[in-house]
Image (cartoon, rainbow, N blue to C red; front, side):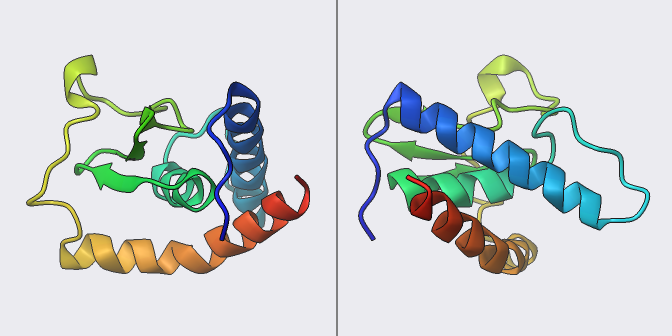
Amino acid sequence: MKKLPLTKRNYEAAKDFVFEKWRERAAEEVGREEPTDLTGACKFASLFAKEIFGGRLRGNQEHQWLENSEGVIDLTDAAGVDLPAGDIYLHDPEFWMNEEHRDSMESVKPRVQRWVKEFLGSQ
């Protein structure tokens, strides 16, 4: 699949799209409040960004993001992450892709793939 160039326009469109989908996801769950930001969406957002822009997924126990030749791509802007600014983007190879994390990543892939297909179809 061809990746989009990481332009300000493409970044903002991807970020807005993921936020819209995050809100739709919350509405699927009875009693869940409508999100005001992308807190808790880092798995979804980073996997989505990887499919759209290309790069390498990175993360730690609190957050995950994408890195490519442009640097860090974080569609969530680290919303809801409670780490000192210097620690937000520290990759933890011991945590990364442990069994629980790998299973969690696999569980969100089908939804993310639907989002990617929809987003790219609208471009």
